[in-house]
Image (cartoon, rainbow, N blue to C red; front, side, top):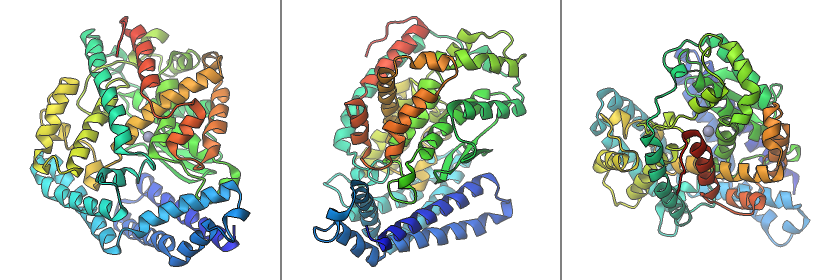
Length: 503
Ligand SMILES: [Zn+2]
């Protein structure tokens, strides 16, 4: 690959890292008066990145590199993949006219504002005009980027490259139909929520120290990253050697810190695991948001809510919170962190009910983009599905259609990546158990290195060489499936609730 193209790749990657630094800082350390200035700085940086990306000289260099003459023959397979990944990213950017980019940014600002006001007023009607405007612009964007008659595909492509509605819908529909009776069976047991999470005090300094212990336990490199506090936990990677995580501390709900940290650590391990030779290139990237989420969910749920992990860590947790956990043993704790109950709020949902929240959103998003559902009917369509899938009725729109910020940004196509993450996580974990038969024994001894090492070789260090589903197929022998996830739920929750679960 010629040095000019290589240096442009480095430049785009560096700009991306600095954008992430400024965005991370905004959520973690920004003084309140600095918000408008930071918004301008970020907007300038985004514009610079966009300008560099759509630069016609970059287009020419990529076309030349991919062409039959000078390029492809002399490049390594990794360099060819770099050209492929960057060409795809560039073409998606080029196809959206500058006028539309500006209009979208403005509509997003208005969307967030209207969403906040609507939540304040507990009324969807206040949000509806802004949402309709965003939807019209996203339709335009989808048409500009191109699709085969399914607009949603063009938006999905922005988060889950290669995934299509035609592939996704049957999987999520089957998942939904299997989960509804499973949730019903578990809910019929009517187990009360665990007493240790009912108003007991958990010192927040001790919570913080425990989350640092968890980061070390899963092998997150604290010399190549750090953890801070923020209102909503997130991960922003500036570089594989500089990965920023956040968590949150709640004196009455310690699980939010414990599992927030494990979740973000899963994202962070992925970012820290990119191959050194891919640094500052388009290959030092996760192939999709769903695959990224597979790593957070793997550590949070498959490992972190599993009994073997707590065989090792529960004694230290009990030592950290001797009063709050005085009457709790390992089995009680394990049952408590896996309590299943249908609920209205997605971010508070357990492992079993969570995907039903996602399927609900996916079905509504698809109907909106297909013009099958008027925006005005969104709340009633939401509530109707909530009743059918989880047996609940939101008392008002803030606990229903207004609960997530995603649509206020006009982000259609993002929600399904959460479900894909859960499904990929279960399949990867099942493959890890086949490859490492002693996995649970290692975890019970506090040793996560075999699992981390396996993930690093199979997944993290591969970067963006392959699209997500192809990568998963290369590892597990099968692409997207709900089988491993459902098997995991049946085995785990069947045992915890003393039921034989089908579906
Ligand atoms: Zn996540």
